[in-house]
Image (cartoon, rainbow, N blue to C red; front, side):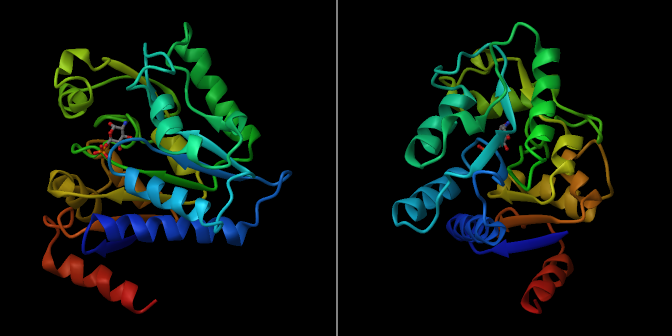
Amino acid sequence: MRLLIHNDYESVCQWTADYIIQRMAAYAPSATKPFVLGLPTGSTPLGVYRRLIAAHKAGNVSFADVTTFNMDEYLGLKPDHPQSYRRFMNDNFFNSIDIKMERTHVPDGMTSNPEKECAEYEKAIKAAGGIELFMGGIGGNGHIAFNEPGSALNSRTRAMTLTTETRIANSRFFEGDPQKVPSRALTVGIGTVLDAREVLIIVSGRQKARALQAAVEGGLSHWCPLSCLQMHEKAIIVCDEEAAEELKYGTVRYFKDIESAR
Ligand code: GLP
């Protein structure tokens, strides 16, 4: 696992956007060989999306040959609901780049058959050749996508019940009322994330510091879903100083030392 500790959120986003652009350029996507990108929602990736849009507008990157799979979606929200993740992605990213909408995938939160929808989502990822790079964020309890603590480390795409903690955290988008946050969501599984050829997780702010500490210094545990990265051959966590606050001084030195020697 690589752990990159940046001074602040802006620098986390700049590094991540540059990395995605560089990975896509090295892959040289084409109509017959699209680059398959896994994407998250949340406040944290917004700065990355803004930079990718700016790079696209400056002519430095095209998404014409990119296929995307989002991590999750609330159950029961229509795609055009202001808080649906499909709407979030359209408004904050897809509508401002040259991606072909039919190449973007977000689980269908309005499905009448969640089990079938999830099985088909897994199939679609496989049919696309698997995910090349999965970008993600984390929740304060270490969740990835909506894989709450206790999720099986080999889980696949499925419906999950959200914890009270997550509904409270996400209530800021629902008039501050946790009851208005849907209680269930469709989410890729931890196994689905681990199948990606590379996983890149961005973490910012003090409210994520404990989860980051558990994932980096603690053992592999379903109690901190982020710790699953310990099982991945090509995992990168990019965080800011605030998120690194609970790490031991020696841990920070260790990872900074490795990066400076690269
Ligand atoms: C939600 C999403 C996660 C995201 C998390 C953190 O729970 N399902 O994928 O990582 O929020 O979001 P934020 O970046 O806003 O802290």
